[in-house]
Length: 81
Image (cartoon, rainbow, N blue to C red):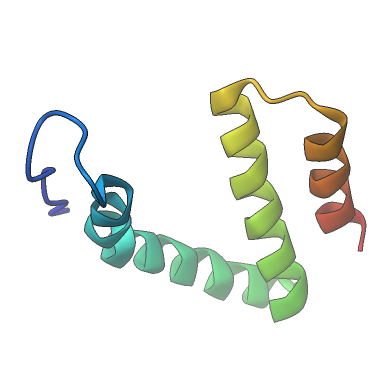
């Protein structure tokens, strides 16, 4: 795994975007592996995509401790549709 370090150790413009770019290849590799295994297990691409998005939102909510009603509703909508 080779994830690049930030250009500076402190905040700077576009740091969030730089982080996305640094994670992109490894993220896609992990998602591709999940999608293949989910497909082999019988899950559709649509179901798998919604589950991955829901899990990412749930992870973000846990990291931010976001327990707002809007956040919970959005996560439930993704899982239940």
